[in-house]
Image (cartoon, rainbow, N blue to C red; front, top):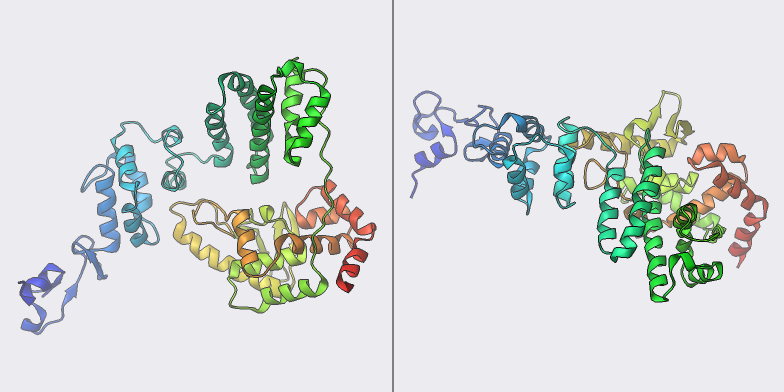
Length: 442
């Protein structure tokens, strides 16, 4: 059994003069980290939390006390994290030690391809984010770069004849056009989803043709329309494949009719809209991000994909008015909403300062992974969980704005296209406000 003196020395309690324990010598104890000497709470092995995290990182990256030169920047970035205790915990998670050991064993400098060849897990993404944030790897559009890998995985599951036909369509048509269009701006989630849908629809059409014993070059317009009618509206996305195939003489003069954009059908009443807005502005029991996103949706009808692209730098405060930067246009905020946005900005900015290890962008609505914003689907679920109807609220707000604003101003306010805003002004002129009034009376 350890004596008090041995226990005190083991955890760092010593007399500064001759090593005699405090109660015996009657002197004040010192409680310092054995590596850095700071008087912090000892975490483990007579080391403070940061020094212990630094030691563990060095061991994981190939050396107990030193780190190879090519790993130094990566090691330094992690060691400087705002919460070293999180780093220690992260190092114990499944897959992390093995992945770090694999990277440390490589003689090559870190490149994106190394991580591209690994499974796309949260651990891999987090390590990539750290390498980018610490300038070990160059910044790139991860959403765009993920598309070819996703497409190759999907194509690998298709029969060989389909794969041989759809591969050039994927890489030389879809991906080429997306890369050209997004050379100077990041790829949006909606565009990523559309590209994936177009590839899936092409494979679905070819599978249907195989099941019915029809060669692609023999496909007729009535057969194409029959296939379109058998499925949902998303099958209209096959237009890209048909256009590509027609231009290369693989099909006849086939035409995919454009899908009719359905008019909005879900709204809230004025009382429901007012009640939900009141809760967002005054109910402190609601999470701050729910209150802020809900208020912006209920007042301005902002799309959540656009809302989640905002950073703390998009909150403009010039001492006279608080506004949001929406695609280069200022959206002035009422005082109560401005208060919410201010509070969220301060909260997120503080969080980002702690997460800069793995993030280059201070998102206003950050997700679980520091370098990525919150997902639109998750935000919708979160709002509904707290009694806010995202789609109905957005439709009602858009309709109210469209009845008072011209399409060009509505487009600037909401960050949508002029064609979309023109449709909304058309809905307002066609008596949709009367529809809401009649629904309210019923």
